[in-house]
Image (cartoon, rainbow, N blue to C red):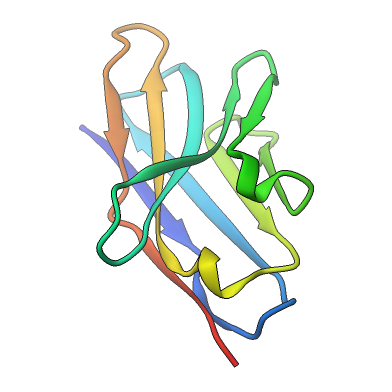
Length: 117
């Protein structure tokens, strides 16, 4: 079993910052890709940012220049630094990892980010 635990969500005013964290544990020894998705009310889940085992990153256009994805030194953690937050960033953010061995992907339960004044 693989467990992903997200933390760091909450309520923030427009222009503010939050840092999301995701820690993976269990029977996953190497992760090919780690990423963050989000789902706003009434919308489909979308990829926000992802980082490969080689450190390559990609971002959806709406967050470029504002969000930064990174991996922890232990390599089983991934962070999403979110700056200059906007109300349209409000969503449940989900951590996702893809196993380098099986290519199976795993999901966290999500953490709610609300950007509102």
